[in-house]
Image 1 (tube, each protein chain N blue to C red):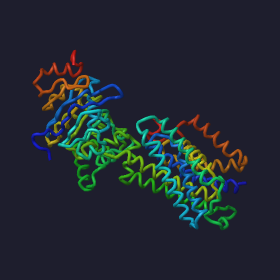
Image 2: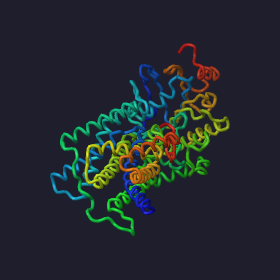
Image 3: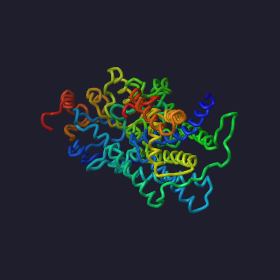
Image 4: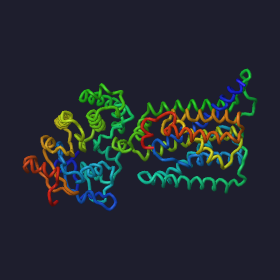
Length: 294
Length: 244
């Protein structure tokens, strides 16, 4: 029983790492745009299908598939930014959100048009047996997920706190008008952040589909949902919060799946989100200034 | 760079509108190199709209803004900063969640000369010692007067040829207002060209070489301090004239 708890926590942390990456990308976009991008997950799904298509038609290595997933997500992200967010920068937040919903449908339709059988196999990262530590086991994918989450969070922290680009991003998050007055090309920074967020999302997407070893068009909704959930748990606009939120969500799901079965897993996660939002509407970790307007 | 016979900033027939409402209805004015030029006028006259249009935040519907001989009307804000125009906006608009030093670095965002930027940072700290004391503090925790100084210093970090200031004394205690105006006079002594919007007409007329009076989206009077009786200027700056 005790080992089960630890084992579930470990599995949860691994899955939570990919949620954390999804939430980090989501939070970056929300932070600079103050807009919810519903097409975030579908753009990732698009990248995943690009890689699947290449996998079915050519011989491609694992690294190539990862790169194609990320590149596809970035391309789709750029498309979303140009169509949904660049035109509505000063305008309506609702218009931008609805437009991002429309693109979500577009991505799903495009993908099912080209690849009509919905569910496709996706090659696993590693076929060997899991690592064993005493009575605990850890799969290779789990280790890679954890390592990626740590590396990306740390790298992002370094970039944001210590580079010229990071200074611009923080300035735009803090006050877009003041950032413009300081001479920062705000539309350009917004596009760059969007592409950065999409590439982090694409990486998360690759890790997730290669763990599940299959891809469906549902990945889009799934990614948006998990990213949004983890972001809300962590606190809107806070990057450390997004990481923590992803881990909390992952651990929670792992335990509820163990105790209540897979059907109840998502139900419990959503119940918890509602409960949390009722008690702490700005998430567990308050962000600096983001929540004031959110 | 500028020819002597051209003013540094020349605004002509400028029209800016919010929807159907024209806030600027054909504004004409100019700012001479090396001067402090002051724009007075009652609330709602369009002073802030003029500043925001000059800085590129608002797009004009018509007219022209020539800076150092180049047309800048309607260009992107960062391109206007690159030309050498910096605005200290109304209500300061510092970056509240960033440290004082990061606020100043953001002001120097377009500059690639790291060494010179560092030297300018030290100059700002020498000019505003209180910012140095608080350099690691978040700008949102500063007092109003300190935030105003930070906003001025941030604008200066871009090494502007023209400094636009929108109501720098707004909401500040009288002693702090005096300090702000002492800083404005200092900057002018060092050769800066300043275009100043002020509600505090009494203080503004003390430092300015030239002033404009703006009412209901138009310039209705221009002159040098003393050209119109000061109490008349002040009355109209606060209340507007009966008929613009």
